Every structure is written in structure tokens, then in C-alpha cells.
Length: 155
Image (cartoon, rainbow, N blue to C red; front, side, top):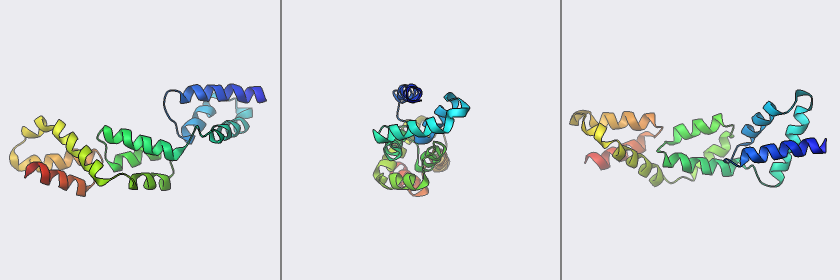
């Protein structure tokens, strides 16, 4: 049984070599790989091993994920939704998102709108602010951030 667990630990370490994963992602991966008769025992043992050596940490994953999504100009609502689908607990998500400064959210939204400026400039002046709201809202930004970006860009 020990050699069986080692086999799955190596498999998961290879899976982790590409990028950080959540505990749920690893458990799902193992459920696909492990035979049904041994599933629960092996999954529990492998997850314990990974936690023991701090190879899976949902809080750390959450911070890294938020940072990467802000670089891709995603807002907090979209980030929260993506993290929930990855199996991160709502409490951890809220704690991690509360550490993100509003200036970082504002800068991400502003950079995205500047990137899309050619699209916005084609729109008549009276509809530009509505276009910005639509674009940023669909990216998951809140109304306060959107209003700040509009005030800065259209003033």
C-alpha cells in the first residue's frame, strides 16, 4: 500500500509542477486516477502528505490567483466566481480580496480601458461612458471603481 501511495504522490507532484493547485483540484485529479476500491484512503493520504510539506495551500493559491487575474484585467466579482469554481472557501476568498488595494483594482480597470481606447473612441461622445461601464462591468469591476475610471478618463 505504501508503494501505491508513493506512486500517486509522484503523479500529483508532476501535476503540481505546471502550476499551483487547490486542494479540490488535486482531489478531483486523484479521483480520476485512483481505482475506486482504494480511492478514499489514497486521496486522504496524498493530501495529508502534500499539506505536511506545505505543497498545497489554498490561501497562498488564492493570493497568486488574484494577482494573475488582476494582471489580466479581471475584476473582483469575476475573480471571486473563478475561485469558487476552483473549490476555495468563501472565507478565504473574502480575506484575500480584502488585502487587494483599491488602487490596484483601479489601475487594472484603467489599463484595460486604455487598451480598448480605439473601440471606445469609435463610439459617439455621449455613449462613451456607457460603453466603459458595460466593458468594465462585464469584466467584474464594481461600480465605485468604474465611476473612478470614467471620472479620470472622460474629464
